[in-house]
Image 1 (cartoon, rainbow, N blue to C red):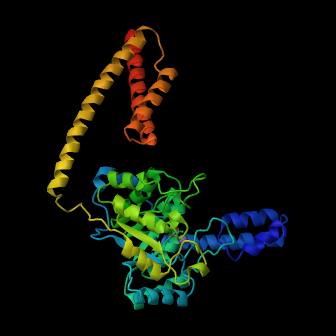
Image 2 (cartoon, rainbow, N blue to C red):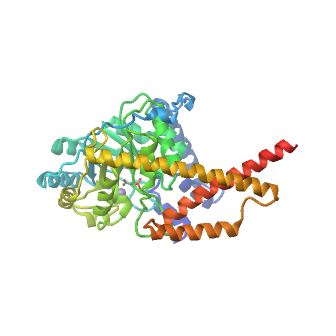
Image 3 (cartoon, rainbow, N blue to C red):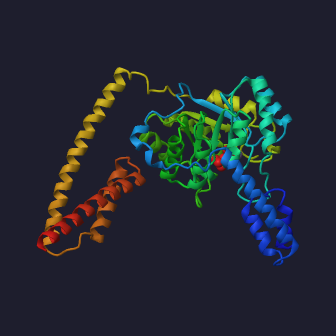
Length: 431
Ligand code: PEP
Ligand code: MN
């Protein structure tokens, strides 16, 4: 089949993609009837889209200049008191499928706090199942009827937001492929201006904390204050143990930056397979994340998307029962023993800081000496020797090699910067 026919066959799965039309137009003969029909059709669609966006307020654009700085966003969050369990299929497929999942959840006595279902599916390649669209939103009534719990769906643009709100979806989430794109996030934010609905934002595909934070900030700036983050892992070209590598430092960093930000772990998209889900979910609870989103289907092998990673409601129940949910310490007074240990750490940290202060004082003296003798700041032999000898010593003291290397890079970088700054300042005085 040639490329043009292949694209025409794909029309039913990807008819809204501009790239698709562009390719089709390019492959059509110039000025042929087909290209005229397609372009006028596209023009009409654009007008409709514009009218739709105007209705949801996309063109009443405001700048982010009024946005509060990071530190003031410390009280964000849904206000969870227990870990939030979100479960449901990767995609809504049929009303019967939704009903069967709900029935099995009830039978197994595993009713999540929030039911998830993808309605519009962002697929990496065209030709895969791209979601049932608006009619699937009607089926979510089945969930309310059987389980009486709120529902959440993914939105990827303003039109999705409008439809989800029209069908009274309780919570929206923004997917990883959308979080990477500030234009799309802003479009969604504008569609949500003045709407009181909780929004959960998945981490971007790439491990970029700023993008993740930026998406949360864009929502906050339009008045969405019930926000949570979802940690679904990051794509990695080399590490094939996971579908998306967890990079635990990212969700932890987010919680460190914004105290009170709830981060829900999504082991399904991290692992990409049924085995290993439990281990990742347990790690998330150990780290102190605030909930789990687990894809659940009554017949996972026959699921229309993400078949390998979905679990049955019975397995979901087994998993949840075997997870050791830690006590949330946030609002609890720590016991005596913990207080003692923390005091010991405080004291050791003080000593560590004194030693660092002393070390940098010596570094400054070395800097002065190098300046006098016209030596370069960076000496690669010395760096190699410091790195190797300290790493070996650290490993003997049961510190990991990775930690030692990161620590030494960090200290060395600061040393080099200080000495270089000294040099510049001395040169400025000479001039
Ligand atoms: C999903 O939740 O089904 C999904 C598409 O997830 P992500 O955005 O994490 O890839
Ligand atoms: Mn999925």
